[in-house]
Length: 329
Ligand SMILES: [Mn+2]
Image (tube, rainbow, N blue to C red; front, side, top):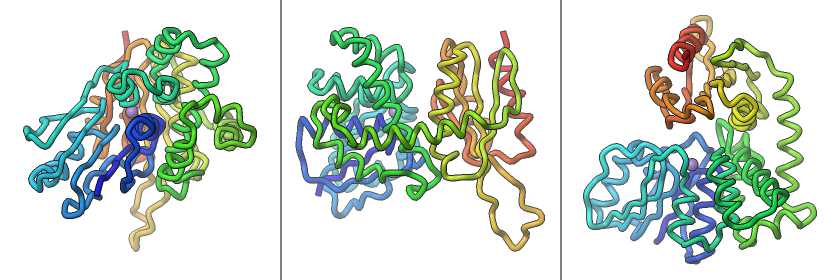
């Protein structure tokens, strides 16, 4: 049995899409919401003979990876997140590059020598790698309108991956992948009325309109912080809204806080509110976000974009100060 394990965001979905358009294969799909990156442990080592892993940190999946390698399962691992110590094994083939300007779909695009480059461009836009996406699009001779269309497509697929659980999402990422597999050329999808592209666009615009009305908790030259309510739409839109804020003010860091569901404990009076936090480094200074978040429990991520799954309300100001002092000139 072959397993395809992939992050449920645009980069993960489109990395697999390119690979399976080029090399069709029956496989068991393992994916989830964008934040769910402990995916490899879902693979049954007894059932698997080969596994492809896309766009999830090797460091965060190394224990499950070691189990597979010890069971003589062949693993092809492609990613751009923190890798940690990569196990040495004849069963492991890796394509890993943690450069802040590349993503898994761009690595796959290189691997496939540009066979589905329009999809790769959409994915790079979706992962907010604007400069890399534009450079590749320009190299392909795409018009400004075509570039804008692929940008939209990437943003909408990426937006679909955000949520606390798959129930928050419009489409289960595995279903979305299956649906997109019918379109070797993303422009066919874009030009088809009522396609998933248009369904996602309508949903996205409705959520973004709500985000624009949200509370601004802090704003200065260094960092802007906004707060979203505890609702499915907030959990869907938070990451993409963070990207939009970053693109509007490329010299600023951005924090998006989304209130978590209150935990129902017997001890309710003592339980504290917490936030899911997403931090974006200034686009013009893509560093530090992962390090700042890693200083807080349940935090981590990449240099350019990182997060904390449960930041207690009492530590919000401390977090904002940490971001301020890190990026202050
Ligand atoms: Mn990615």
